[in-house]
Image (cartoon, rainbow, N blue to C red):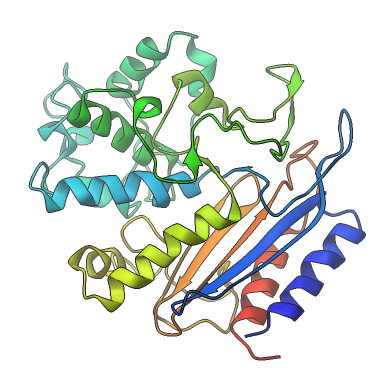
Length: 330
């Protein structure tokens, strides 16, 4: 595998100032693992070196590492039917209009981003009370549009998880090495947030997740080792013929599976992975890809939104270059 070439791509983007720093890691089913950390975990208000054990705001990796896994577990246990509408768990969804299209949306459609919900909504601008904001999400008459990748799908799935488990997401245990409130000595900084008026470090970058005080679409933190531990679980389950992994990989569209993306032209995983690969990215500069045919996985964790999202980081090109290199031999 071309790990050395992938490292060169990461180091180049750090050296030219596109991103402050990052951690690149890959693992194989035999348990071997390679990891490379470079650059800075923070440059403002003061410098902090990137370390192999640095924690990252995983952003939308929360959707697949936490929310999708938990929804599929409840489905396997019979608590929910993926093809039933969300109202089977959220009967108060659009409760003042029983004919509303939102009441017909299913769990599987949300997992596959096959709903008419918009991509995103500035929910945090509608108030400060997280319970009122949840009520707003449930009762809002959402604009009906063409299916797109939508945070709203997973915000609703997160509220459903809270109803099923009887507690808020931040009270749930996300798994070993993962946290909603990291306490490590090294945490990669994200943005100097204009809304909150500070550099964010150890608190979620996503404004809606922050306002909701926990959500299904963002909020998870982890190290590269923790992310690869999760990926190794998927590879091991696949070898053992676990039904959940087969379901996870089942195509829902040309580009999507349950929660995850599937390979397509110019996708984030590069040009050399097998067709039997799943991947996902996070807005803060994170990503995870699992190639079941090759039996390998890799994660690229960066803080490309530090100190501001309003710059050209080149993260999309870096992800593709890294994925292509890793799936080719040196």
